[in-house]
Image (cartoon, rainbow, N blue to C red):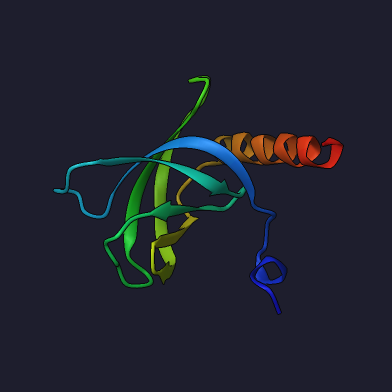
Length: 111
């Protein structure tokens, strides 16, 4: 079974600015993520963290119209980064992510 078949929600390439930190005393790290779904994202980083590690995440859309923040947790740690499940995002933030994903899927189908 491929990774796409095991995922709960479709993933798309949406450029989002992501700021994250693994501990309350850590500095925020800033990067872009392209691999996004309604419930998660992939952060590219050389540093490895164990599955279950909590991470505080802030997302900003490239156009600056949306700023989303909440808690996530590492669900998969692979060479090159972490798959993060967004477990602490409120319904409004999840609705924005779902809308962004639906728009990207529609663009991909029409291309």
